[in-house]
Image 1 (tube, helix red, strand yellow):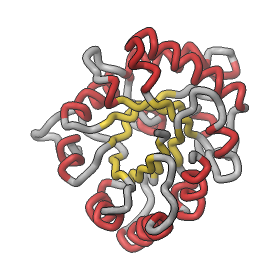
Image 2 (spheres, one colour):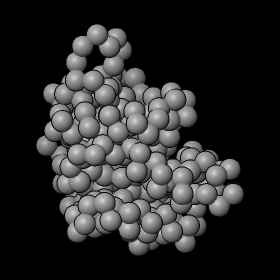
Image 3 (cartoon, rainbow, N blue to C red):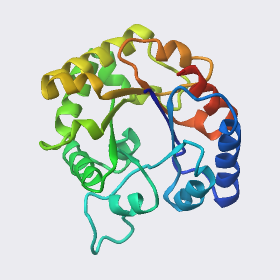
Image 4 (spheres, rainbow, N blue to C red):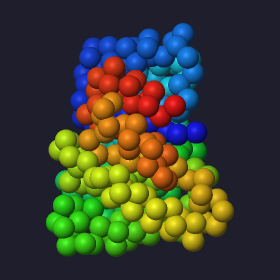
Length: 248
């Protein structure tokens, strides 16, 4: 089943976060089956309240990041076990904003992915090239290099999701062409097949980067696109529901 994941990023205080979660939940209750798995990843401060608001709707809850450590003297960190304890099923690791603004390396992302799976979560591992890297024709090399470096040796492919997010498209209103998306997703699918054999064909590959209700259907029609990691459009209930419906 396809996966549509909403990444709220650092947006939402209690009142507005609850209002958004309830609006999405209300749109789903009593409606026809979604036809896709839908996931909300709010800020850590909203996980408990949003989880309660979406309980029983079929919407899944996820974290935006996790510590590579299980517990201990790591002030400010949130462990994967803590996320699982709040009802999370997924966690995003290696988002480009973490890589760019927090200096996370592939090795750090691999440790977080391992920690996520150790806590029973599905790890959504993000990869993607910058605009200058694409301009010099290195997009595929960069993305596959990130993929290779961001997975621990013993990762469980049955609890792995991969999100391709070209950095230059995130929040810019610009999206790659279907052919450009197909090229990278095809390369990722081939790489996953070589790494994991037949199981690799079942690992969901999400596209993220300026996904909207207007372009979602075209993006989701691209071969090897198994869903979307949605940023800005997940902050408006009608837009997020529209993208979920496009995945049916």
